[in-house]
Image (tube, rainbow over all chains, first blue to last red; front, side, top):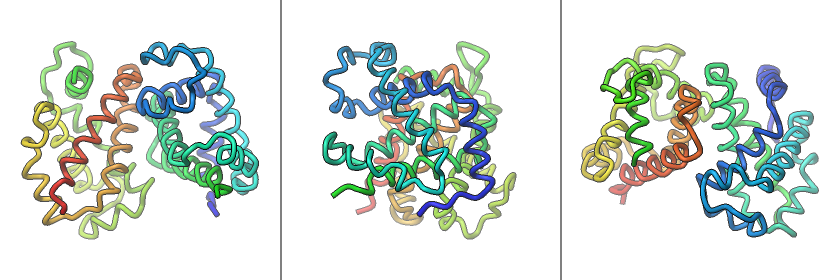
Length: 147
Length: 146
């Protein structure tokens, strides 16, 4: 199980407090689809994904990104209990959505890059590392119920 | 190609459009690269038992700058990365033997470093180009492993 130190928790919650969930979610999901185009395979129903600007402007991408990041907010509130927090979502991603867990790692890393863009110098190596730990923990929790 | 090339000019001189190659900015941006790698992925420190790994160590600065400079060489020779990095490829295969998984980790940290320093320039397209470029560099550096 992932254990976060007090400093790591502080780094995570202080950054989270300043995040615009709607914008950041759309940005992160959009970048995932741009940087790793094969991830578009899950979003055939999303309409125009033909270019970076189409993807980043796509309302379905933005809405879904917001949904995903809102769910990450649950992780931030339950840092000591990630596996339980994501148990149902894990089953969903395996049984209904059929998403390779590697995609959780890719999205987590894209989110970290987006945070670096927004926070710049404030995103120090220590803050960065705390967030890497979080996204790794979330990815692992989401993969936990796979069978 | 366009994004990586002009981006290295951003690294060299963010204020000018042409971008003369000054050494100041690559050094600046390289400063947090290794600290990020070692803090997020402590297992990578196992390759540096001989280094002083404290924040701000001269060895770390120098090594970070070396890495960024080599990547700069690859950018300048983006159509022939294999030949530009040939010696480094041999070094990594026969002497350093860094496990291939670590190139992904360092590449990610480089993306974060660049994103933090150049938020406006690091668009989704630039991000995609850099990720692709670094993945090719990593491939070249590990291609002689076996």
